[in-house]
Image 1 (cartoon, one colour):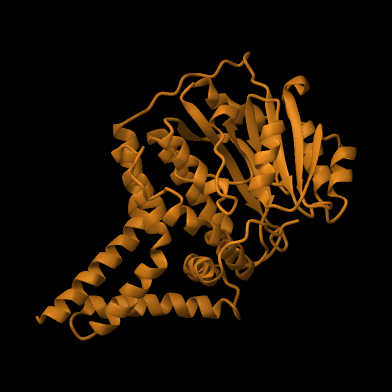
Image 2: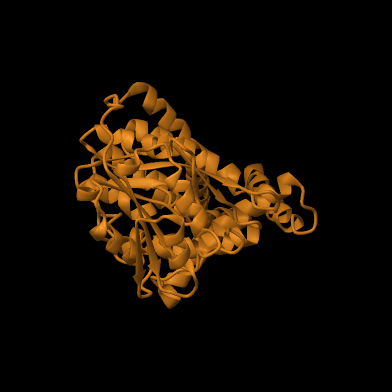
Amino acid sequence: MSAAVTVLVVIFWVSAALLVYVQVGYGALLAVLVRLRRRVMPAPDPGALPAVSVIVPAYAEEMVIAGRVANLRALDYPPELLEVIVACDGLVDATAERARAAGADVVLELPRGGKIRAQDTAVERARGEIVAFSDANALWEPDALRRLVSPFANPRVGYVCGDVRFVSESGTNQEGLYWRYEMALRALESRLRSVTGGNGAIYATRKESYVVVDPIMGHDLSFPFNMVKRGWLAVYEPGARASEKMVPTIEGEFARKRRMMSHAWPIVLRGGMLSPRGYDPLYAFMIVSHRVLRYATPFLHVLALATSIALLGDGWIYAAAVAIQAAILLAALAAGVIPARPLLIARYYVLTTASLAAGLWDWLRWGTPAVWEPAEGTR
């Protein structure tokens, strides 16, 4: 075997092994580690509820903001301990007026500066010792806030994210399938050490642990690892449930994830995620496995495909690898004509994997704006 072939073989097996590890092996390994190392959290004191300010950043949300505020007002939480703040990031419609009419305690009318800066300003105005956050199109279950704040009974906890379910009456998007697996991974991470990512629909921090980040870097990815670096735990509370309307189509999900990744890559490459300072070995391993390698999957796929094609004729395994990858790509193409569930799952996987690379391209080529628009079809 020539040196060139040897290099191709090594690249193929490393890239293929990493793909299998990222998609399946990491979750299996977490499950084993959780069984070997159980972390006991203190039981919450049901009589000691903290004062909470729930912050809803909003841009052009006049269609949903009244329902969002009403949903928060209906929570099973003492009203004297609950403050609802709507932070309007720019005034382009009747969002502010409808939020006041629906019963928001504070409505901030801010110049357009992006979601993060709207949240920062709201935290400065918040009276609660806990600041919770929600998207304008999310709905929380009645006991969601009680569940969300319960882990703060542990003084080491600085961040808690809840469980979000994406709902859709119709459409082709397969996000719900992926998200259930993602929530299972976060549950294992939380039980073992700390989560590596959150979500925008339902999460909270202590006001003292709140981190001001670059306005292009969202909280979902930047908060958990920054909490760990500062000595806090970042945990997942599955009983704190929220729901959001799903983007109807896989193509719309591609656009949403592409935009999200244009905000995520700056966090990974220059926002401190790759710096080992503040990480213990276990959490560093989780960051590399769940975040760095996950975001590298489009490049690993390209390497696996290119090397397996180059190695055709050197063994049946390479022919099988080419056939499997070609079948997935063909199934993804066919889903545009035949909307069968297996084909739609293949299309979802291909496009959402491609969105990781597309988001990197967007950030490197044009930069990432701090402002955002509501995802199409989610209101």
